[in-house]
Image (cartoon, rainbow, N blue to C red; front, side, top):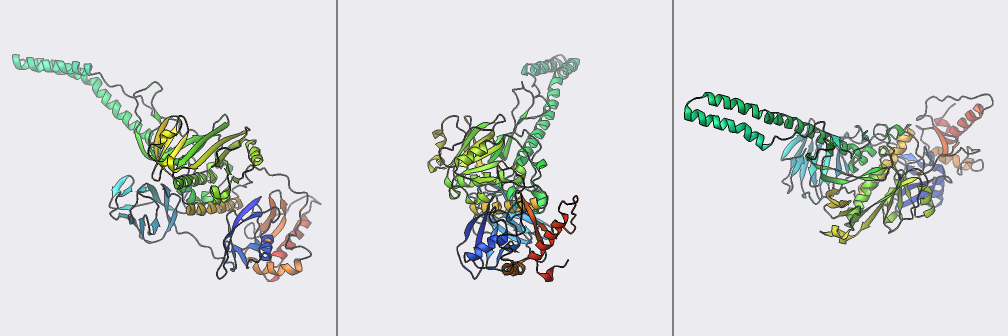
Length: 613
């Protein structure tokens, strides 16, 4: 299995940052990789996340996360930085996926040179001021052109909390608790199916009935005035009241129906919001503690041949219904709700969708879709990027369940396996063959001509596509057109989120959240034999190299190599996996041999002054 990492230089050393692909089958340990890098002339010591590279394992399931940064020429720093409890999260808009840690103080929000900078043309240069106080959080508009909205209302200055929805230009933001609960998939299997209102649309009384009820009253008044006999008025009033009873009943039914309709529309809004993670939610969940936010337990994943892709937000009618034969229902309009595109078919086969328009908008939406499919709780369909890394999103190689290939044989092998397969490409054709997989093909074409006004007419009728401009977009589905504000993720935000997602998934796997195999691969049988020795530490080189291992080992994490599984070396950390270890087996099964291996492995990893038995 390939491991994608980045090598950077620590001052005063200076060399160009390099992306490295490590074959963990040939270099399963950090000590083996460190030896190769030192032989190539890179300065030591080498560390990853403040831990010596020599003490780490590279192969899954306990391996170094994809996207890790190897620092060359700096002593490991074991201090761990923690995020503050609050963060400013950009959920949607042209610069979604950003997470700004917040401490007590004031932060300007604007389009440029601000503490919180959003590349949104709808923002002013200095748009708003966010103040984090000891007992309150205050947002203040700084005379912006488009205003500041809190929960849909324009404000000049307002006290907000973590439940408030903030809107600046086209960007929807919020203040979130970093160690709070992460995104959880909706249990509703049919998010796009209409919700029942529970009441039929009340039938309005006819105008003839109203006139029939009022006419006797008018005649009674005329007779009473002309004859002076007021009992005519009493009888006519009684007749009018009797005729107006259906009208009063209609008004009561209409009020009850309006309340039920609004309740159903609100439920529809809530289920659309939580149906798929937005870019900001994915980025924030990647930074949260692994077990609280990003658990990859199979019981929490959804498996389906249809995937909902979030393209952005739009004004849409609520998906509600009152009766199959009721044609009088007019669903209320929901403002700024996620636009969800269903892709795939329950009966299998291949579906396709095209994203075209402004080049930066196309790239931003592509990154947003990659983050969505990579969220561990989103089902994680196998995603194939059919292009060279630089042609699409080179940092996508860090994401779980992403395969970068241009090999038709590899693609054909993935289509033969059951499940959902998402293929992203820029080429005209992808050699997808029929198989057990349900295939969704997303084609991204940066075409400035299609971003001009009226360009939707250039697309053939019936094509499923979205046409993006620098500010908005138009989705065309089966001849219908919907205007959206597309999600966009910048390259820097995407890189940070992709690396954090890889670290979070690996940390969750170590904590027991489930193992992650290579996309499309299955775990095989364990090897016939395994050795305690590695390429760096073996009987011929132990005298020469063990001192270097002792020098960089972490005394707080004594680790022994016990064997090898189908997915790589099996390591035991006495602190993380201990402090107790139970070894059980029948007579002659190898208990004593395992204990000798454990003692020798610890002796190779730690110097005598750090370890006693």
